[in-house]
Length: 389
Image 1 (cartoon, rainbow, N blue to C red):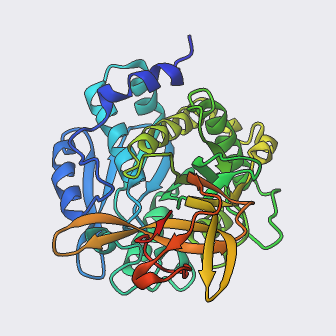
Image 2: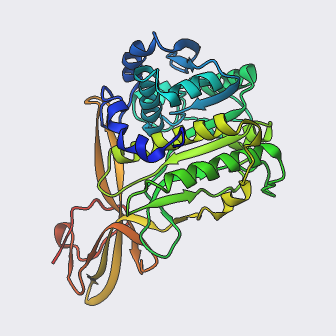
Image 3: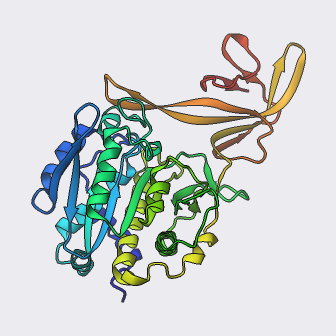
């Protein structure tokens, strides 16, 4: 039996999931301060810098191995799944120290992890930092103190592998043939507009992604799949520039699953994908680029998914009637005072949506649209307060 049995770990996940983390998508700076207290005896935890609003940025270090794996999450403050997954892994490491796999990791890896690169944005569930910079587009000018900390730590430790953890919007479908939401998406970033794949660092990240995908496919549910994110070159993006500097970089996007608005199911697959990556890195060592060409066999994500579609709706303006589809997306709204999250459904597209799929579809042939104040036709941006009958 292999040291890494993903099916066995999948079935035992609930035993090492860190249940002290609130299942809400919200994971704020105050939550981080609470949770790192319980890992002080099993990990080295040190402040490494300050955010714009002077909140501490922490680094967690675990393991004594020669292979350095550097990870960061919540560079976008409202993307919390990666942080939760990493604390699930640290909980596994702390509670099952004698487990053969944990012993294998501790001897082979040194894990360096920044659990919340953007503490100001995280505190108010905001993508950007306190001065509204997208940290993932500040890799050239390095104006934000948070991204300065990231680059300083990477250059200081010179890690062998980087993991950049994000959350993905629910608009991505794997392929464009049928409803197939991206549960997870991976990217080995390009280093130029030519998307050169001859560089060894890119081959290594491709090889790791191929192994992770192959393992995750063993435990995927009946709905959803693993996708490959577009490798268009973004000249100011973090991953593109770090890979350009010679660091193999893996972008992991936690995707979406039906009826999982808080991403607790996605968290499970995300956690296991990171563990699979750790195992491949530990076991292959000098041969990480093995099978890198199979990276391109992972199907690409397509922006053809909506949260909800009403099909064949009858609308009316004046005396004229039309048959259209109405597409809606759910938008997160964070209440800064109450510190809670709500989801608001809004119209994002109107017309022929036959090439789009949705988590929820309603076929209402000829039923009439009834909006506010007697309005008989929809408008982009309208909140879902209408009726169809």
